[in-house]
Structures are given as C-alpha cells and as structure tokens.
Image (tube, rainbow, N blue to C red):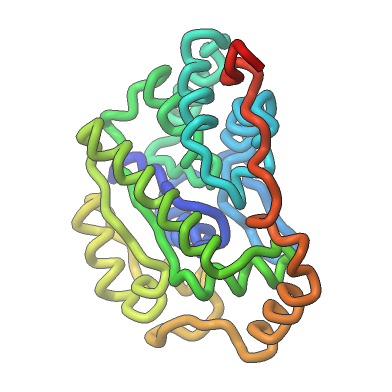
Length: 256
C-alpha cells in the first residue's frame, strides 16, 4: 500500500473515495473535517495549511467555483517566500501513520507548492471526476449558483490542470470516475488494488456509501427540480456572471 493523494474539485464524491481508502486501512488524519451529515475524510491539518496558502490571494473560497492559473502560479511561488517547516513537519507526522490518504479540493491549487517543499515522488495519485450534470445539480442545490456551461468548463479545467501537473512531474496516477466507482464497484476496486497494491473490498465501500450500488448514481427528480429553481431564481447572481477575484498584489502589473 502506498501513500495516496486524491486530486479533484469539490462535490465529486471524493469523500466516498477517500472513505473507501480509510476503511481499507489508509490513515486520513487524527481529526477529519466533518459536515452536517457526513465525514469528508479531509485531514484537518492539511485543510488548514492549504487554507493559509489561499487566503492571501483572497481565493480561500473562490477555488470552489473559479479556475485561475494565475493564482496557482502565485501559490506555487510561495515555496520560495514562506516558512516551509510546518508543511514538512506535517508530512513527517503523516509518514509515522502510513499509508495515509490526502483529500482536499484545494490541492488542485496548492499541489505544485507541496511538490516544491516536500518529496511526493513516493506517492500515488488518484484523479477523480464526476458527470458534469450531476456536479451542476450538486452545486446549485447548495446555492452555489452557476450555469451548466460554467460547471463543465470549470471541471474540465481543474481536471486538465491536475493531469498536466502529474504528467509534467512523471508521477503515477489513475483516473477514477465517481460513476464508475458506484455503478461498477468491483471493477473499479480491482483497478485501485492493482494500482495501489492494496486490498480494498466491496465491504470497505459499503461502510462509507449507503446508497444503492451497481447502478449509475444520479440525482432524484426533486433534487434536480430544486437545483433548477435555485438557478432560475438567482440567475443574475450566478458565479459566472461575477468578475474573477482580483489577483493577489504580487501578480498585479506595475502600471496598475
């Protein structure tokens, strides 16, 4: 079993994938971030470190809806200016509990920084994606109002950025879809076991996913209706109608 990092955007079912690994023996952290009705399996210390990297760029919440190569470059450049000891100490603590799993959507913005300050060459990576329509339903039903076109473009940009990082650095990865994990769990778990040298089982998945398996997951008609109504009612406040957050001061033109 190898230490594993999940790269994804938000609301892709990554908590199920991370939970599967945690149920199968991977260490998610001493404390994980819990939402009202489920465990995200996100190491709280990891999320705090990532939050700190994004906060100066005013991107600590915008990362959920906006893809910004400029902010990614800025965060990466912080490797030469901030105290990296806390990041290295965090990895050392994780290694005492290996194999571990990291899962935080902010990693799509911060992973290049991490790669500059710690050795990730011994890690495996899982790149998780989800059906774009289901992502649109999930975001809008949570009042993160956006058009389907924006959802598709954002998700594609995040995925392409993650894959580009991994291929540029020749890091091993597998692309997993949420739909494949739920509809074809045995096949997907078998792929994961071969890639990770793990012994995950269907029981590990059932321990964290309480919906029906062996059929493609989809939103119920009431939830789709709710998402559509939220979108229509708040159409003029959708995130893709708003301006992209201003870049951090370090990125501004000297003429501004």
